[in-house]
Image 1 (tube, rainbow over the protein chains, first blue to last red):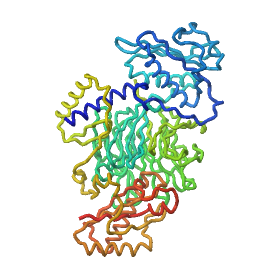
Image 2: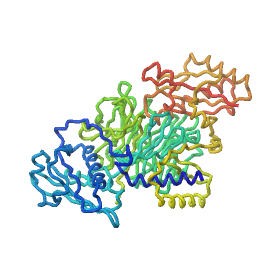
Image 3: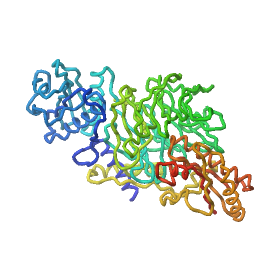
Length: 444
Length: 186
């Protein structure tokens, strides 16, 4: 019976995860944190409430969309939300199509951009329409129709945020995706969690009283690889997130102490230690060996696989200090990429595959840097505030998630790579958060 | 044995058969239809009744779940720790006498086994530090071997920077955390 209760609780958890209800589930709503940046550079945008076309009399569905969209637009680093208390127009009595409302009501509160829309619920589910308007030119820039369950509404908002970024900047946004990270949750153990980028749907993936580290997704976000001490010795586990099952990855070569999953989910590069020597091996997703990749008497760790699955970047101490190398997964000689600094590690390929982000030590703490994968001039990304570690790219390549101790406890932050002032915390709580992994887009 | 997830989180290696697991999910679905929105799922601790059975290739650990829960990993016991320099795994001269004394104790207690545990300070990446801790554990084990302790009585494990003895962020604390601990078991 106990098992039945647990299974029952799990199914409830899934339902909760798909149906975030900010009013009922306290703490499940979007995070409200200050954006650290110069708001003067941000475009003021008003996100109006959705007009209820029936079935959303308490505006819960409309609010779920608006709240999520506002948070994502704030995180984007392009927009500042005009205070909703200043909105003159009542969305329920005005229209949302071009010509059905007065742009002057929005110009007068200094909104340069505007989102309006409608929601209808009942029968087969939710139908939602949203438009992105340029207030100055009184132009409709983009519009979308969505349909689905009430629980899908936050995702509709994330996809609309991604579409707004495309209309505004020419490049689709990254918010319809997941963040995995490791957190102590205020205790002594480290567990793997997932959440949306805007902080909703926090889900504790592992729950064992040990240490769990290094989550990595495949491109489909169907699988996650992570390291755990739950069998008392470190081992990799490949979790099937849809089937909610997992497989332990071990090796006859020694003890598996780290690794990463390839973007297609078919291969693993594992760091395997024997007699104090750690080398990297290419394995199938079932853990069968394809080939050894490195062969030194020292340390070879922190593998990252390129988006095309052809190459890996990794950290090796073969030069005497930890430095980053790139090599073909088909084998061959690694090429050293980093030459400045005496401790460079945790490389991550940009989605285009042209750059690596990594952490570099200076004065006992780390900053995030980027460098072309063929080597060259490194570019400092973080600003020397706290120790900044473990970069992970957004699927559009515009942002990096990383851990930082800038506000004492270690948290996961988002930063726009092209504008180092745009930084916001993505996680909160009283624990220490580390090892972020930003998934690919979740797809249709 | 198939792994299933229970509760709000936590992957559990269940001994349930596939059919049984399917039945559980089926019952859960029926209960869900009956209205689960009022129930709050509770986290379930992922316990592992026979940890050593899961350690393939003879690479087991004498650490137990109780050691994790009670926070006793890397603490206490009859043997003394040795310490290392920053990002270094060579045995320091002053630790030679500590290792000799540890070896004497092990020779006087031939029924015991020792797990050499490598630890690192908080600076550096998690994965690199696990590899560095493995180097430190191996260095401690190799030294004990030169003092006549049989390889078959010794094992190693690295906890990297994950289980610091001292929690402060300064050199005196870091120096305490760069160490080998020698855990004795029967």
